[in-house]
Length: 423
Image 1 (cartoon, rainbow, N blue to C red):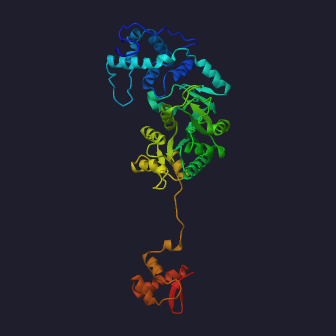
Image 2: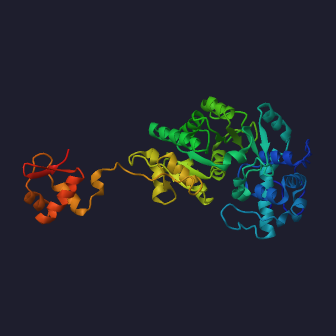
């Protein structure tokens, strides 16, 4: 462990000055808020510690580790199972493996302990009328628990604070930022139709498909949730500021797992996608290129056993290439309207899409003989019985009986000693 910023894991002398927090680190709300600043979204080591110890005790351990890492690593914290993010043990099945993972994690977290005071960020949130939710809050969307150690420590919320109610019937509508007019039209119609069917529309607040989905929900007078990669004190992207403000004002919510003042950057966008997938009962991709953040949302939803839908587009459109990949690989169901999305995400039976039927014609009810005679009848000039029977491949007597049925059905006319179609 000589390569860690704190020296050896066993008895190394501390190299960082003692960190004494200016707030009550044992307060569960303040501790959860602090963790959302200390660890990056999706940090599995931090998630495992907080899940096993609780936000307050886990924070106390990190503060102790910043004073004396060697002493902290000799405690019972080594018994906490630490996932490695790949489904394997990652070498943490041994005390040495656990020490290495924890020491590396403390090296990531320690620089953010200095001047740490979540009360400042809570004051900023309060000025915006927001609320901080933690997993023990009844307003917390319980579906996020499916993320395990990758679940957020807290959610910073503006607008409607009861995310549990918003997520009860929810669908994520996601897609490309560089959307086509076709994609934006489809996303808007899907969102409008879903709101009319009692669903909340969840998306990422970005340009393109995300913005179209939020606009459709707002226009229909229904709730929508925008999950941001940065702090909720500053709506991003700036070009969607007015739209996100309307989301907050119209019974929706703007949500982030990072505190006010946090800047959005690539890794936080990718981490944000897991929240979109987990919070929603289903995810629908409207447009996506072959390499797209929307595809990562869809694949995460599939890993969480959430239904995934994809809207097909022109086979020549690069903007729909990712959707076609999802369909070809069997990861998504083809959806084309709000009825089909509601069936994908809703309650069995109650939200079933209506059966699709084409235009019904009287000839659809004919038997085989009737259809053959119908095809054989001329449109204008009547043909003799023998000619109609010959064209239909029927005996004259069989053809005469069948033509009588067409006559009674109003589909055939007998005139001038011959037969033709009616109409």
